[in-house]
Image (cartoon, rainbow, N blue to C red; front, top):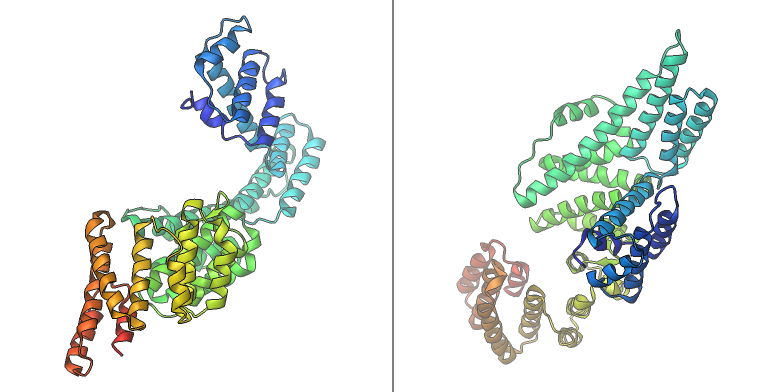
Length: 464
């Protein structure tokens, strides 16, 4: 039963939605049959008891209605009603938009007075809501279109509002087109996909030859697209994007705002990975802005990948107190299975940056690193501590264990090469005669030439 479309959809309803759907179901306007109500009651009992429904039990329950309805028919009937409820809920979630539909209904019935009052109310509600995203301009366009359709049947010699209708349609279209282009460019960079975004060049030209950049939604997505595609000027476009985002963040709903932040953060991380200068602070600022607005949470949790990225960037900037506070404050937002390991590793990295090796090692020993990459990251941190504190016997044994660990785990892909290089170069440094300048320089050149060596800076620092 748990794999039926009905149960999968029913199980997602919140307690408040269950109450609403119950009222919806018992209204004769929406449902005049008893079987869907009986099945709803049974499914709600299962939901409260946290157990899966059983077809045999459903059959018994339905037989009591003496209607001869089969389980499959009852499922289909209740699912159809649930879908109507979800449509109703989605349709009337925004009362301001519902007033536009009401104005259309009055216009079709030739109720001029009702139409004008309702259209005025719809316009006021759009004005009062804070968001100025694509849907806002789309709604205003719809209002103007309703106005035109009404005036076209009642006025003969007046100038119509077709210019305003066209301008609003263009704005909504441009925002949507740029939004799609930004997501497409970001996606094709990661997945090597190819997208052709029709009319994009015309949209860009229209924006660049007008004052449309003054519209925050257009400006944000324009600069977002440009910093991803106009790489020589990426820094300037990125900075303009950040300025507009800071000034107009409240004009976008959380889900859209989250996408904007993540597009910029992902690009910042890409530039950091390319060792481009000046991107650390900008990217951390974006992370901090997203954190303050709770935009990094999915189902109330923060991913360990974002958590680790924030720690790494803050450490490179020397923000030790801030990152320690971040770890302690946000630790409980991590998934339970990764919580202790991720937080402990983060605190160990902070302690290492403070040269407090004892605390760093204590934190590293606190958790079982089930994630292989986190495990290797922890082992690398131990390696650095043993080397810098002169514990070469411990380091030698540690390197042997790390080498065996890498050999055993073949599923880590290219990371095997990276961590094998870390082990190999550490072993070379242990046997290196630092008095021989030529040998030191040769090792320095070899390390400098390694692409993707994550600890390159540390090796070069140790080589002096």
